[in-house]
Amino acid sequence: MPENFLFKDLALIPYKKAWDYQSILFNTLLEEKACGEKGQNRLLFCEHPHVFTIGKSGNLSNLLINEQVLSEKGIEYYHIDRGGDITYHGPGQLVAYPIFNLDSFDIGTREYVFRLEELIIKSMSEFGIKCSRLEGAAGIWIDADVPGKSRKICAIGVRSSRRVTMHGLALNVNTDLSYFDYINPCGFTDKGVTSMQQELGTKVDFEELKNVVLKYFKEAF
Image (cartoon, rainbow, N blue to C red; front, side, top):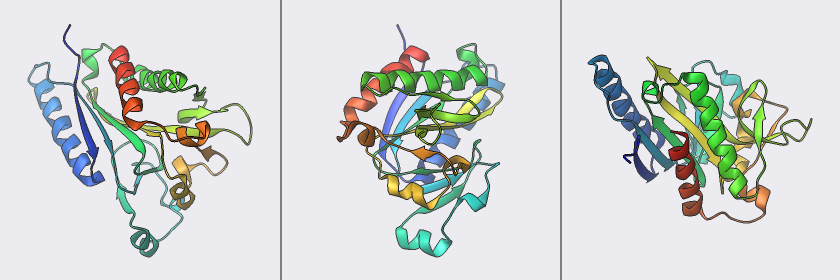
């Protein structure tokens, strides 16, 4: 049975380089669709060096340090065309970029995001981590319904144009969470962030984790 998408692992790659590559694939898929062609769905996995990105509706006040400190810390910053507010990407974090024509799966954007959430929930379950959605807050959370304890383990922010997607999700695996202290993650000031390593008390085999997430991507799409 043929795969519904081509998969490529970009490993550690600068954010701008991955964004440019995504944009090429995204625009190509849009052009193919406009010509009545099916086009090629693609899924990219990667890690990024330290970077903050803020979505098109984000508030710059959620970046808590200035350009000088960003430079001193070696953190890049980009204002980008996805939904959502500010988030962090860095080493030890699995970033997934699906460039999908949703017509291929006969779904809309809401169902697409639901499936992204569901595949992360299932992936985390394989590692003994129980997580869920949080009403009114994108992403995947642990102790979502416990006031003062809810913490995000996976951020989700997508762009969709004519039912073609880009951007995606960022799962904290062995991530240095101290970088989140420099922002209000996704605009929240009353919720925390976490990682698989923090929840499990041990470093996670990154390659094993990628294989599990890829398995559930194939199941979902």
